[in-house]
Amino acid sequence: MGTERISRGSVEESAEGLEEAMREMGMGHEEESSCHDSHTYGYRYTSPEERAETKFQRKATWEWLKKVGFKIFDGSSLTSISLPVKVFEPRSFLERLADNWAYIDYLRRAAEQTDPLERFKLIIAFVVSGLSKQTGQSKPFNPILGETYQATFEGGITVYCEQTSHHPPISRWEVRDSQGRFDYTGDGSWTAHIRANTAKGHQEGVNRLHFTADDAEVTWDLPAIHLKNVMWGERTLLYTGEMHFEDKKNGLSCELVFDPDAKTGGYFARMFKGKTCPDLLRGDIFQSKPEASGSTPGAKQKAGTVEGVWLSHLDIEKERVWDIRRAHSHKPTPVDDPLPTDCRFRQDLIALKNKDYEEAQMWKEKLEQKQREDEARRKRSVDSTTGSQRQRSSTSKRNSWKTLNCIHTPAQVNTEPIISE
Image 1 (cartoon, rainbow, N blue to C red):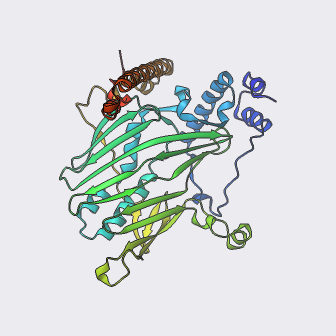
Image 2: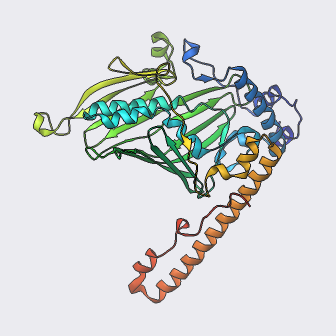
Image 3: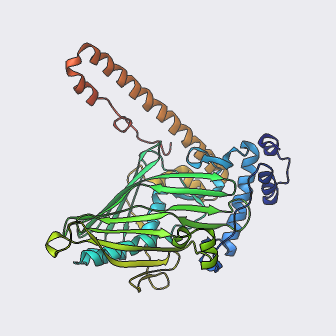
């Protein structure tokens, strides 16, 4: 049965109907947990409130699919598809970014450490603990180019976020310590695809944490995320892949692997060894010893083992450094006098907060159209400038290198977003 016929409502308007339709297109059901303990297989949306939200989103998505068809399930990028407003939360991605930093106390403690290794451990705890705060099943709004978000954490730590690219979508941020002990910056480009009944996303980009005490910089990246059973079955969120941490100045590095036992041995080895737990993460901290210590220059020595479950705890050398039952998390407070480009002024977010879905959908589509028009204008401006530069370079080859350096990029063109009228 083709997608065209299905999209016109030839099956029952329900999750069961969608499952039937997708099976007929060769899209099977997701494989169930391979872990012996269901409590260590992803974050499950099982509370009454979460189940109600899941049902609400699926109904809205089904209505939308009948209009646009099923091509979305062939692995298409979700960042370039205009989804219905009912699957969104009334926040921008810039706001949601700060959820990762809920356990900000680890950064404060790290800034007080004089031992680079102990500081490194606290940073790993800060990053892993933040994963537990990214389990919301509603999608945040894509930021508009030039959109900003300003907030503060307790103790005067300031947060600045800005959308600096439309395609690909790139967000940048800076988190500053009020005492100037650290400066946390980074950039993230979010990619997301859906195939069959699973959505896969990844925030690509590097996180950089600079400490003024010794001028060291710790960097890390984030794992991929899988949301299983999007349209039927029990929704489950998993992290997959690896996370890499590095402090080049102090010779420290660590690779954390999710579901590490699944990567060792073949099928029969895993069958006899036991089933794996996808929420488990494990890795070793290594430290390079300087030449003066008598070791071979650049040689690495094991400095500790990291192991835990991203939903609950983290141990380093069998010492519990993070426990979700005891650690205190923080929420940032938006500043009282933000820039006019702050995401809180977006009309679609305001309408959605008031549960005016029709108004929110109208504003969402309007802002998306304005973004497309702005992007087209920027492209024409760049093409026009490039053409002028080429014409000048053809008459003055001697100065061609100066001409090329003057070509405007999209970032140099006026890109102020229109958030409200």
